[in-house]
Length: 186
Image 1: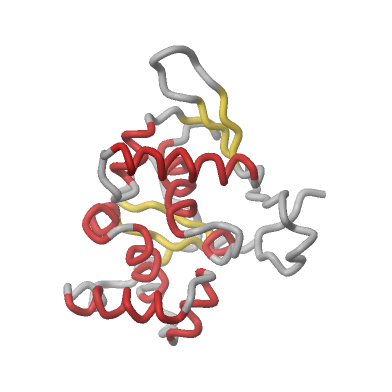
Image 2: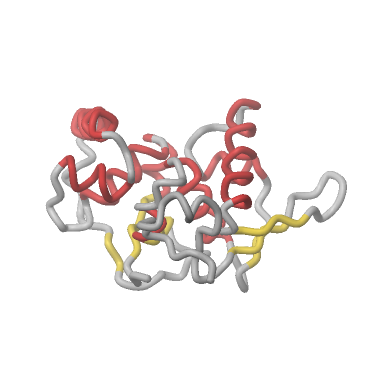
C-alpha cells in the first residue's frame, strides 16, 4: 500500500465541500495532473472534475502551495486531513465517504475515536442540518459495510465509538472489482 497521503486543508473543506477539496488535494500534490489523471485518482467522472476545477479557479484556490506529505502527519493537531492515496482512488466510495474516513483518522487516538455525527458533518464541510447528518450516517454505514471501520454504540445520548482498521482494506465488492486500489481482506 502506498505510504503517501493527500493533505486536505480543513479550512478549504469547510468552505468548498468534499469533492472540490479532494480535487484540490490532488492538484496541489505537485504532479501536474490532467483532468483524466484527477478523475482516475479519485474515481470521479471527468465532468465533475471539470466543474470543480472551474469553481476552484473562480475562487482562486488552485494557486496555493502543494499539500502532499510522504507519511501521516500528527493527525490530532494538524490543520489538514490526511487521505491515503489508495483510499482516494477507491471506486467503491464517494467523495464524502473518503472525507469522513479522513475525518475519523484525524480524530483518532490508538485507532479509536468518538466524534459526534454533528462534528463529522462540520469537519466534512457539509453543515449541521438534518440532511447533512443523514449523509454522515450513510457515509459511516458505507465505511462499515466495506470493513474500513467498526462502529460500537457507547450508550444513550453518547457518540459512537469508531475503530479504524489499519491497513485500510476494502472487504466487500472486491470480487466484482479485482483491480480496486484498496487491498482486499485475505
